[in-house]
Amino acid sequence: ANSYFYVTHTAGFDTVLHGGRVSSLGPGETFGEASLLQKCDQSTSVVSARPRVGVWAGEGACFREAILSAVMNQVTSIRAFIAKVPMFRGLSARQLDCIADMSSLLTYEVGDVPLRRGYELTSAYFVKSGELRRLPSGKMEDAELLGVGACIGERVLLY
Image (cartoon, rainbow, N blue to C red; front, side, top):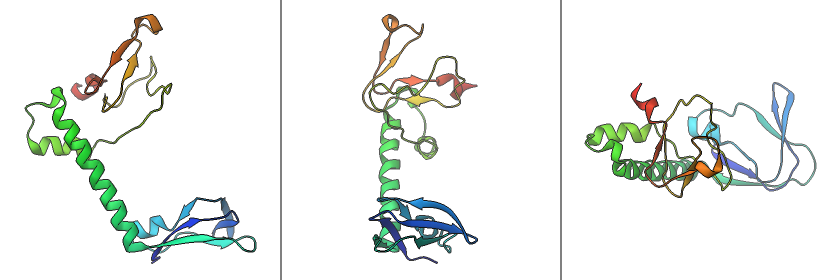
């Protein structure tokens, strides 16, 4: 199994599978992470496609530790937030942990439209920080600001 995580410093690397070129890697792209996380052999080969290409290599154990730490920090942050959401008051610690385990953090920039009117919701969304603008009628003059802890799509949780 691979023991390094790689970040390309320059362009000029190709990924190869069964002898055929699959893609090219540019500067800042990564490879080796899947085999490190799954502790298995690399599924593709990465080949230098031109002279003098550069790559940074990080030791695999450090990569796994960093990923585990990042995941644990995110789960802890989500769990702390969920415990403060009024809709979840009265749930046991185990129930809150289950909700945190199935949750993910999504980040949006100003002007992004995470949900569109008329689309079927398959998840509930809670505002963790900042504000979202809800347009119940589709018109800006009817905008409603949703702050931290507000929920969109709570019916998905009930039905």
